[in-house]
Length: 180
Image 1 (tube, rainbow, N blue to C red):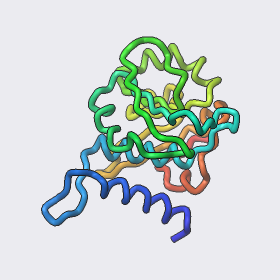
Image 2: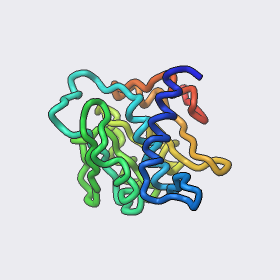
Image 3: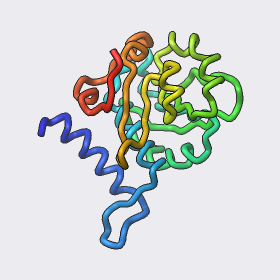
């Protein structure tokens, strides 16, 4: 196995094993939304932001749009580090657009809001992630979903590049689909 794959899966296993919930045989058990949070965290770890936006004295912010269940699941990564910065989770329960973050997670019921904000988001170095195929089709950068009883992700590479971000080629190899 290549070193980057070992690092990716090692980090994912480490985070999963930190979960307070364990099966009878002490194997870690996590809920689906916690798995999605961990996968999105790892995608962020293997994404490069423009140097001008990488200030180590500020937190690395994941903003969740009106999805309390998923926001609760993101507690599993809050306080960890990525890109040399501590992670903070922000719940966005208002209509204003959060542009002071690095990752925005967009649920399916926020498709209309995403469509209104898309032109502005396209110009910003913010990774847009969704768990809804329709939001991904509308232009979100990453889709995280359950396929055949396992978590997978797809990447909209033109949207990623247009925002000035770059996702590791080693990570892209694990994607279910990469749109070019």
